Image (cartoon, rainbow, N blue to C red; front, side, top):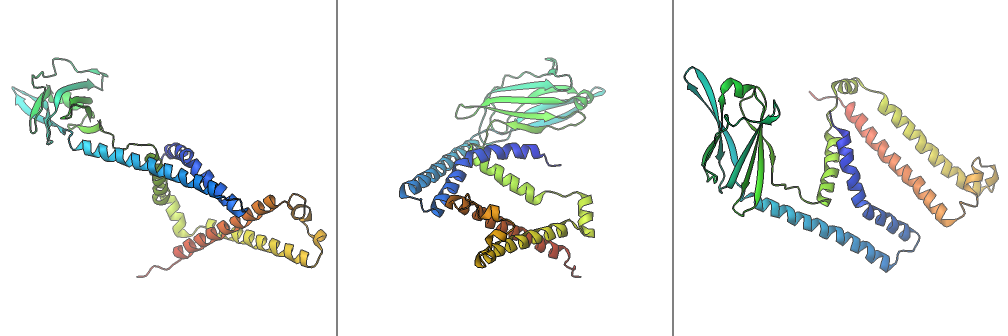
Length: 312
């Protein structure tokens, strides 16, 4: 199931961030339509666009810097070994450095998530090695195998990289499992605000496009649902009604019988004689008609694609 709340929460801030551009475009179209678009207003809109472009370029530079810093970060991997001591198996957990660069001032924190408390000191292995060179490892935990298998463990590693910047990486082991998985890393590559907003729009687009339909809906589509046909019929009737309404207005004006029109009180009112009201209404009127035409085309294309015979 897709968590739509998270997607909506990501899109709303993105819409707020890009709202100045949207408002500027609407104002520019309105001014251009009414002949009030001046050079100063056009320059203001261009400056606004340039500000957003510079903002995005700065955030891209921040991400490139973060990616560049990752190359100098050490890489760790928990290593688990089991040995038979006497009549019982014991498990040893080691922290191994597998990267190209060393880690300094390494501190390992271990928490028993099953009991929600730090691991006992008797189970932890102390080491005087606080610097991990590449391909070097330190033992951090020693437990009986059965106890280790049933325990959920969180491992947090603090370190300084070669640039003397503090970093953190975390690993987690679920109960009844014998391996650690990466839970979090210190380096955050997703820098910026505008880029995250653009990614939110892209994520919403991908979800809406590739959202997996349930099996029941797929079966209904295979059998042929009448929902699209009802929408197509309703859309077609609305478009025909809008066209007939516009045609009737011109016809009644041509015959000079405007007062006989059923919508005379609206289309020939004093408010509609104002140019701004007239322009906004008919722009919205034919804009809606254009959207309905696009919707009708998409629905017809889907209906034809659904009813297309499968070639054997």
